[in-house]
Length: 80
Image (cartoon, rainbow, N blue to C red; front, side, top):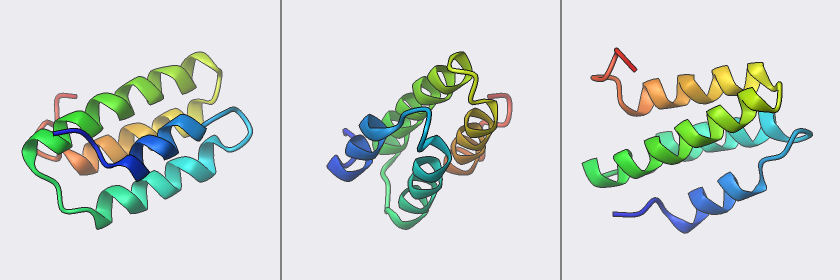
């Protein structure tokens, strides 16, 4: 199952200037949504891609915050 349209729209809006704010909005959205395992997996993949993109763009704080969102989304996968 795909992540929600709102989630995907937020992912698409992230840039150098708004990364921290959008990551916080994503954190709130992830916490508020009732997710199936398939949706969580989809969200995790999108967030991992976003974190990589932010790290490559030298937005290390926002990348770390994104990994924290992932950890909250999939707490049983501590190795990630």
